[in-house]
Image (cartoon, rainbow, N blue to C red):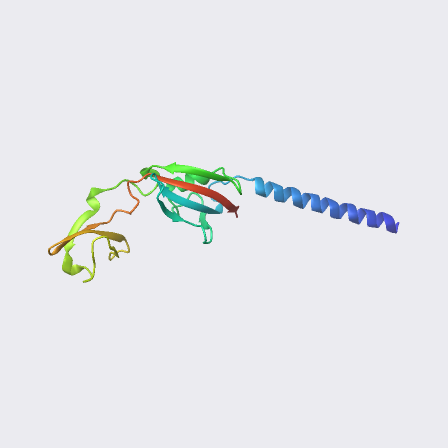
Length: 164
């Protein structure tokens, strides 16, 4: 009777191990869907292959799919991916940082800016938005409140690291 008990225990432990492996395989095989919290590594490039951002050497980018935590094109690009999968996607401005808007160019008196400011500098306005100093002529400065990637087609190399 004692041997039957040992055989039953070994059989049960073997079954548990098989079930655990099957559930792990299923988890690794599931695809990203809206609402999932995921982590990706990425490289963002312009059409001329200029890299504007990458996660290499940093923690993966973590976000909830389908939220405004990330640009719309990235939300769309990751749906259906599986852990370990990589892909390259191109995003037009509407799926990235929007079109370039000339209405977001404006002038201010240079005296309202920090004294050492020069063309090309980026400043934060009173609402937490980043503006770029486009030009300074005389007592006036031209500022651009467009995102620096507005109006640009972006290319992302994406690797799905995890689905949580």
